[in-house]
Length: 397
Length: 236
Image (tube, rainbow over all chains, first blue to last red):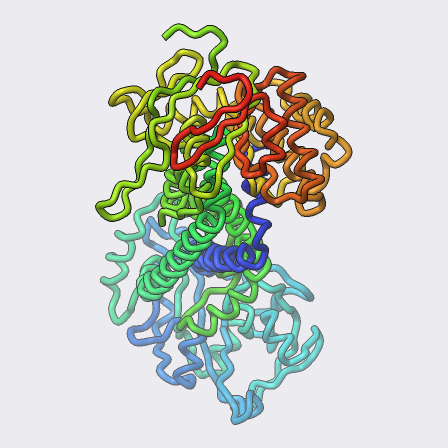
């Protein structure tokens, strides 16, 4: 028995180059579509993970103080503001607060960094409270400082890689001319901690001459507690600013949404072009087979049979193109990731383009739906061909 | 209308084409009867209206006026006009068609081409039916070949098998040998003759070749849209 599907498939093989070119159009649009949908999905997931990996939902810092190492570096290490370490106690008293950790950020100019020097960021921390807030931190080598006042450093994965450091090595803090012994190197976290050098809080306070002062307090809110209320209460404290990571996320997502609308419009145009390509290809092949379709009707095909046959051809094209496009997107996800990063002002760590089965199926369903719509006109035209006109070769086009 | 072995009956069948305001009668008042199991050839010069006539008999075309009955059933009568859907049903249940240009699907094998009509309406044992026909027509060794790999005569045999796969009562052949040399032409007409004799199939063949027309029991000559001369068992 020969099925409708087999006949349609063999029909497509007649003009291999034309079928291939149409297929390429569908593959490309499917690739663009699934990659962009994957980007939407992946970006949000990565951003959420990035923010969750910071380990705290709220940060308190002195008014006007930059709160990210990256910003600190951009500002050339200037602009740091300090608050009293005692603020920590005020914060810890609040019933919504689960854990707190003090941080003193310090920045020094390193003439050996890059071509013309750069700013190196040091985080003075208390390992005990810091690590309970970031339980995902794992050591590749070594461990935390032996003493709160020791001249020891724990390096983030990338910071250690960049300087080719092992535990036991001595590193020099430029500008301050102080040496630290590397006691631990962290495993990769995919967060900004990878590029940071951690030193004991007391040592940092001593070196940067900020006794009893800190730049940041990280707060972990109790499960189920109202973080909005806590935020409002924290604003009562003098000269501090509150950074809610949910807010940060919202701001970044808003920035990105404009770009998303644009890329989705481009994807929609790509899909439309592919759709027109499909209609054109199928319509051309219908006209080329005008007589043949007429003969099919003389040997018993009803208009609906012809409609189904032509529709099946469109569906085969779209299904094959859709699936290949999704496979291509999976293979090229890493490259797409790199390209997107070039154009984005801020990109979280981790995969930006995440394509899972659900997304693949949604895209495939979308492409098939578009295929079905594209196929209606050529299939209807073919179904209307009258056998006698076809035999006489009078294409009623 | 009561029939007794009458397959096709026409009364004053006319088909008129318009060229501007001028009426061109391609078939001009044809009344004929074709019995079940007849082998009828229709001959005539180019433009005489023989193809138009066979198209009308095979329900591929609507007459301008006149009546057409199939097995006593009125298909075209005064003012009666069947829908394309009804005509398709009649065509696939009653007729098998073969043409000068074979019209095989180039990407399908010989076997697949023969089975093709049955994909449009499910019938059991399709492969067996197709294989039997190919054997009958001496094409069983070529069933897996593509049309491009067989000769013109063989292509027409495949087209005949395809026309017969839905077990029609009447086989209509419009210039079936028009693209073949004289040897292959004679072979094809002999096949039609055998099918008529052995299976009792009604065969109506249009040809301009007088010699081939002689194979038929009856020969109708069409000139200016009218049946001028009938040879053989006369009843038209």
